[in-house]
Image 1: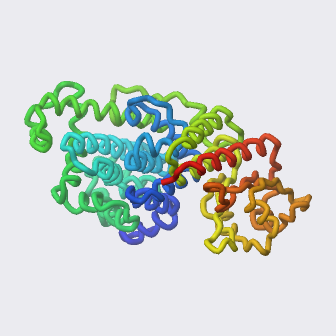
Image 2: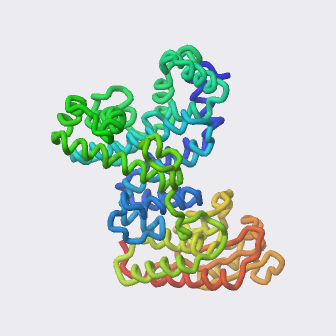
Image 3: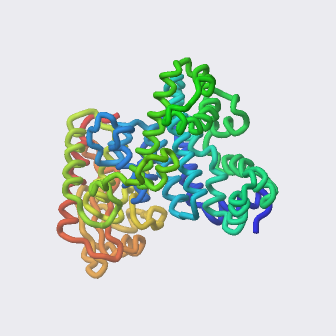
Length: 464
């Protein structure tokens, strides 16, 4: 059994939660000032159908989308909600999907619920103070007990021993010292450094007064302890004095904001499919889930005609305006993957000399390594020249009339669809789609050609 903080970090980060840490880093460190990173965030989300479904449910919730204007795609969610808000939703969803799914007992559930509740309270405090980095503060609060959460999710026998001591009435710090020889807060600091998630998080872990963001996080965890008394109308004015001084708000306003943030935390947990945790936020609440929206369900390989139509309408709107190339490519990828139900959709671009075709973006389920393999010298695959010249082709492994042997060997697919990607009439690459070992259908071909042609129309418009 791991005994030191360093050994626990290695155990959690490398053995138990490697994918979680990697995705968390990808999401948390993307820079909103770089347009390509907004597109990259979309692709990170689309790699995971469960995350995609939950994010769309949250994106259509009253809290994150008060206008209630329908959001059908992750690409649209970036535009409507903004990069930073969507990033916060991603981290929240990732935390639930990766850790809560282990269902190792009530201690884990309470830690996760407290993290969500504190994140909502921190966000509310940041808004009240008009802090510039509201979503960064939200993420910092959400992850400020990531060591405790990870330990209860992955701790095994050690977690059971700590739990036994807690049940016997031993204080948490003492129980941790007795079993582990260190405090779980030290594990949080070490994991935050390992995953390099956020400067605000690290600052808040060093000192509650290190920055306004750190103060928001610390006060948020104090606030969640006051919410039950606020709900029961038993909180004393002096208990609210720190929050009043911190925000410059009156006692009545603080009471109102504490209650509202608690209700929002419960609503978000329900929307995330974690209604069983609501009781840790509000003892009087019912453990209910939000109704499942079929349009926001995970990838199942079936076409969704309503979603296809919604994305095609969006592309049609873009065709008459100044077009963001990244947004068009993302909508084409999402439309073919989630709308047409095609498991693997890839965009490859020509290099400047137009001698090689290189895989650039992919959306797929399940995940494979097709992007790294999708690299072709055009002279080695003469038929790719036909696509570069503007043709759309459907190639079969057992009928090599288009000489696609090398392409299908590299992709491992039974057959595939390939079409030109054009900007202002000039082909800059190709769109590729397949169903792995399953055969494509005429309906797949029709949807593919429709999206490829619509992309060409969009990319004839002035671009930015």
